[in-house]
Length: 242
Image (cartoon, rainbow, N blue to C red; front, side, top):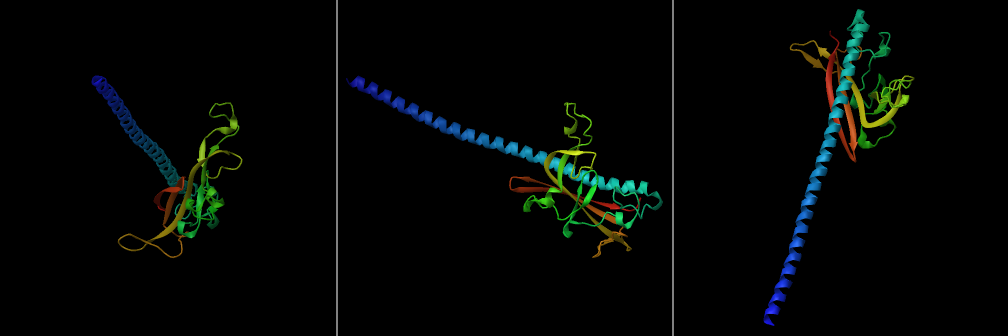
């Protein structure tokens, strides 16, 4: 009898220890799985952000290069007066005051949207934190189909090709196919090179659009990640001297 009681007690003890071991193992697995899941989600989120950041930097750099190309093209287009006509709008066919790329720095409440060309000034600065309204949507970058009559991606449909990205598709020559979540604004400010030694810039209260020596270009790209706004900003100084 005593031996049977001992055997039964050992069996019950063994069962209890087994259950406890299983519970401990489950707790360890749960904690490990939660940690691994958290790390995986963090890595995925970081990869998405890095992709967005790289794309935004490329879009901002494209804005700077567009303005630089505009200045260089004006030197060729208006070769008889390179210093007087260097800051004409890209679509300008005549060198005149009305065609000057006018000042619209971020502090004055306006910016340029950039697509196939510079749009007219948008009536507010790019500020997605305030919500994406009518003015912010003017800065939105979208994919265009450059030629709706041609099937450049060979999918059997002519007018759905993701050829170009910009804020304002050229009328009659392209259609918007898909909106992105990036927004780009170009801000321009002019400065005068002071006649001093050493070389220095003057910063007058009034912009030097008519006789400025240097165009300060700032290209800003913003995007939203949930409630968080992200921004990259690149600047470059373009002079009127060849």
